[in-house]
Length: 145
Image (cartoon, rainbow, N blue to C red; front, top):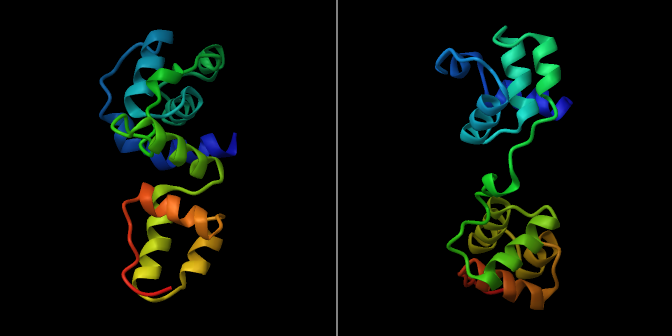
């Protein structure tokens, strides 16, 4: 609930909701709008309630709706990735390592701020695993370990 409320305020500020055309918020419209805005249904409903665009009772009847899994693209896993690269990135994400975080770690090494061993530790891999990550991100160290 807290995460969805935060997301409603962060991702759907009042001015963004005012840009939506006045509509009847039925099941189809809610799911289509949540899909288009790339938020979950609960987040959208919290924002709509907050702005008085949907009554609490109506929102409660719509809370069971979900955006279909295939309609939730993950920006960390673009369709252009090979099957092997996708599997590796998924493994990193399962450990909580986003692309941005990995790139920051690699950049810190390139700027001689940390060693290769420290990068491996930060990425939760051993030195051999670091080679796989380097390959995945097409990275080669710019300075010695």
